[in-house]
Structure formats: C-alpha cells, structure tokens
Length: 160
Image (tube, rainbow, N blue to C red; front, side):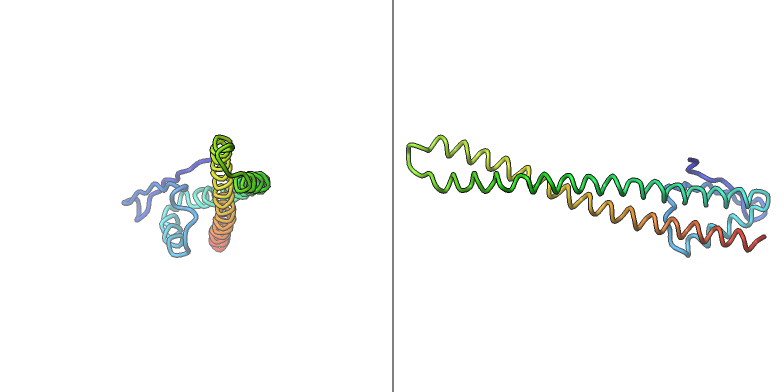
C-alpha cells in the first residue's frame, strides 16, 4: 500500500507530498483543502484521487481486521482475570483463618502468592480495558476513513 502522494498545484509553482498515514483519518475541512490542491494538478487528478480512495478503503479494512484481534485479546484477558478470582478468594480465606506462630511461615508464603495473583489479575484487567478501548477506537477510525473515501469518491464523480 502506497503511503504517500506527491502532486503540483498553483500552475506548477507549488509542490506537496502528503504522508497518507499521518493525514488520514481527517476532518472535512482538511480533506476539502487537500482535494482543492489535488484538483489543481490536472494531469494526475484522477490517479491521485484513486490513490486516496484506495488508501482509505484499505486502511479501514485493516483497522476492522485489527478490531477483531483487539476484541479477542480483550476477551482472553477478561477470562484470565475471572479465573484468578476463586484462587484469590481461597488464599484470602486461608490467610484469615490460620493465625498463630505455628503457621507464620506458611502465611508469609501464601501472602506472597496472593500478592502475585492480585498483580496478575490487575494486569489482566488493565489489558482488558486497553484492548476494549483500542477496539472501539479502531471502529471509529475505520468509520472516519470510510467517510473520507466516500467524500473523495463523490468529488471525483462530480468532476466527470
């Protein structure tokens, strides 16, 4: 996938190279400015607009595919956190139940295990939240890229 486009504008006096990865997804104002500059490069206008449409469509598809990956990772992390909960409760009960000098070493060991399990659970829940957020952001970005592609396509068709 080509990630840059180069074109001239202002009757050959201006030159621009746009890194599509950095530019898209974008708002309507910036997109209209880009289309206005592309429109001034008469020789390559259709080619440039097709490149923008192709980039937006491919990026949106890639984001939607990544969304599935993020959703799966989110589910896996949530499962790990849920599976750790009974063991955490069991160790907590054991620590509270056994008191006294005879169980001092065992309690220390159990507390260390409990601390490790709680850390694993916190990490899993944190991963769950991050993955859910990334999946939601991927969907939003894909929708914006699709909208950008539609705007460029409509503009291209109006020109004939």
